[in-house]
Amino acid sequence: MSTLLLLNGPNLGILGRRQPEVYGTATLADIESAVSAQVADRGWKIASIQRESEGDLIHAIQDNYDSAGAIVNPGALMMYGWSLRDALANYPNPWIEVHLSNVWARESFRHESILSALASGVVVGLGALGYELAAQALLRLVPPSSD
Ligand code: DQA
Image (cartoon, rainbow, N blue to C red):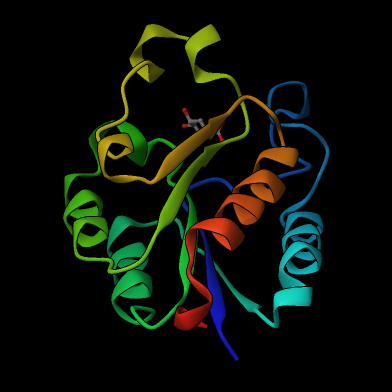
């Protein structure tokens, strides 16, 4: 059975309780359920990993090279996570960067992602729905032969 890596960075484990006016009321468990439902028909299961530190996220990527694809919300590491960037550069399969909030409508320091150029695509500003859309994109981007 193939695995979809669902990787969330710092401060995303408290979704639902974190600035709900910015990030919405869905919890990470809600998002995990929604993404699992999207990929169930393809026979994929998800490996959901949320960590507060960059090193742990890098380990998670290195431990999951055999996943079919990945959804990555790097949180604030989007702006300065150079080691995370290097790890993602070596990730062998398609991955999608997701941000719940519309970072372009927020503070200017959120207007740059050092990761996005490596991603197959980026979904921004659609809340928890963004994860589901990313899962749908990966279902199309990952060839059946990779299952
Ligand atoms: C975020 C946006 C980032 O700027 C912020 O640091 C986060 C969450 C989002 O999902 O909207 O932690 O990645």
